[in-house]
Amino acid sequence: MRKIIKLNLLFWITKICATTLGGTVGCFLLTVVNDGWALRLLVLAAICLIPLVMRIRAERFHAVLFWTIVTVAGAAGAAISEFMARMLKWDYLGSRWMLFATLVAVLAVWRASEKTLSLKRMHRRRAALFFWATIVVSSALGAAMGLGGSGTGFPGGNAALVGLLAVVGLIFFSTRWSRTVLFWSAFVLTGPLGTILGELLAKPIANGGFGYGIIGSSSINACLLAGLIAYTRRKEQGMVACS
Picture 1 (spheres, helix red, strand yellow):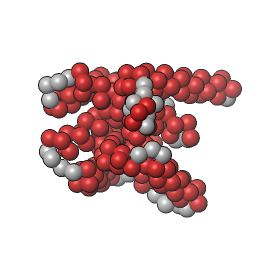
Picture 2 (cartoon, helix red, strand yellow):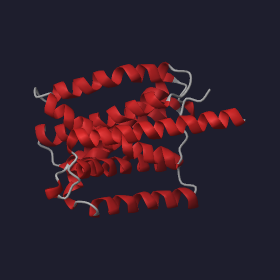
Picture 3 (spheres, rainbow, N blue to C red):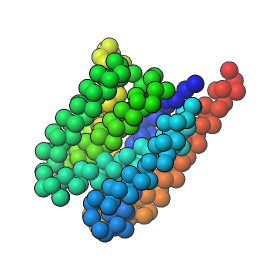
């Protein structure tokens, strides 16, 4: 029984939307939870724990659970990145290298433990735990790239990210490079893209944004994400009915 999502264009569009929502939710929690970064991370961990346990125990893929966890992981990743920059006093460049090293280490331990990094083995709980650990670390790395590079502004910052994603896509379709490396490369690169888009939606019009604020931009992204999930589920149910 299928426990993983299909990796197509719709997946990546939904992932960018979930990352954008995660970033704005993280900012909203920062305004609500005023007692420090540790409490903020604990709140995110508590929010993520229930759907994560349900997702790992489920025998079939559930889009709502999957994208809920990805969204919260994006918020947690942004919180971790800002914690490293503001509380540990690391610059974003140092945070990126540390998180990149952590990502490589998690993948290496995953490979040594499971003998493969294939996403087709998500029915194994240990593999699923490694997968979600990698999701959180890669989300933090993507947030560090987006927050550290947000000064380049829009559309300049996003144009560079879109260009890098296009290169990854070109390599995917024209070579036989490791699909695992290409998947995580694209996953990381869509992180800063979502961060910059979130800032663009929330910033005041006077500062070059759309002026929706944190709550407004979160609501827009939540509705868009819900629509994408509903469309994906309807499409898959139609394919099953026709088979």
